[in-house]
Image: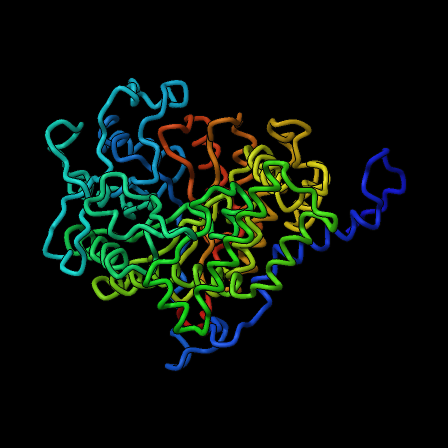
Amino acid sequence: MNHGEDERLPGDLPADRRDFMRHLAALIAAAGAGLHWPGVADAQQPAAGGPMPAKDAVRDLVGIQMGPHTMLDEGIEHCLDLIQETAAIDTIFVYSHAYGGDLHKPLNLLATDHGVPVKDQQARKLPLVWVKRHDEYYKDTTLRHPAIDTSFAYHDRDLFAEMMRPLRQRGMKVYARILEAGGRGIENFPRVATTNVYGRPTGTGCWNHPEYIGFWRATVEDLFRSYDLDGFQWGAERASPLTNIIQNGNDNSAACFCQFCRARGKAHGIDADRARQGFEEILLYVQRLRAGQVKPPDGAAVGVLRILLRYPEVLAWEYQYRLSREAVMKTMYDQIKAIKPGAPVGWHVDHWATSMDIIARSAMSYSEMAPWSDYLKVVVYHAVTGPRVRSWVSNVQRSVLGDLTLEEALDLHYELFGYDKALRPTANAPAPPGTWRDYVFRETRRSVASAEGTTKIYPGIGFNVPGATDDPDTIYQVVLKAYEAGANGIVASREYEEMTVPNLRAMGRAVRAPQRAPARALVNNSRMSP
């Protein structure tokens, strides 16, 4: 890393102090990856049952994320014909449960060239659940997905049943898609809410609560016993407790400390009271930093590291949080495979985790997720990366990187993540288009390397993402770069309803281009489940 500035303005930190803060910040961010705590399960150890069987390599997947209401608005056959003809789509990812999805976009965000008049989504009552519920599968939980009554649009339609014949006629596949995001109408959800450091419930579900685990297991059993699905994708766009504290510092940041999380901690040799106390210390410290109530003489980052050194249980608890999340995913994976062994099961890795949250990167590599991941759809939204990173880093700079200027903190972030600094916008605006290909290539290559050949990598290429401008040449180039970096397939993202036809055609040209790299075969290494 090059930090060779010799000149500084009055009041700046000395160069050696700035260097120290940069390296210390990197140490703090990556600390969870390199420490082994007595009694904590080591996810690197081989499974007792021996190596897992190799996963079969298949041809490239060319996917697209799709709002269920969009298919019904445009007409199922019209929609399928358009995406197949323009973008060479062979697999659609459709919300079966859209808790974390945005189904009510304003008209100005919707593509108007799909050949069907667009509808004002904000004026509609759209359901969050698009499949029929069968209560016999929910015997291990009191939680239930919300019922859909006659007040909802399309309450009398069963999209996942209706689309099957048109899909099969076109040789296409469908993956059910879920984004977890708090209660949002789920019956009895308060029973499974996480508990913060003050013993108060939050609005998110606990990965260790038996009923929450049972709820997601039941959900996928219901899906795969009730519908002829080809595959599955699940995601949860929420950060870990330590990341949340650093990012926002609100009272609900550090969770969970319920009886089930405490029991897991005890089973892995962690003192739950010490972990809770350490998280509270960091939370209060960050809150004072953000409020400007403290100016640590040794620097903001030193203060955080000092607490971590005195409370090593914090990092141990943080790691168990990630393992608990992965255990929920493995539960769904095992349930689906018991019903339909050949169905690919994979996970949505959000933009925070791919390009901003170094704690998430440190906690678990993609190869460690492979035993319960046939693929990972990693978000690489090129045109909005600059502004999103700037927003993320500005929050960190208000807390643990408070001894650096925002520009210095951004320099540190881009160097740690291996991105070209030219991607960085000079203001809160998109970076120059010429830099976007480089970002998609680097992040896809990094993801492929992290997977170590044990699971497929499908970059989620951003099309017409709000806050960005895209042109067909850029889309064509970034898709080619994803393949060049070793992608096993491509998923057009965020949502089809936002994507213009010229950009869809550009994707199709890239997918069909003869010079793109072929999909790679996979060899699965043995790993231990969380």
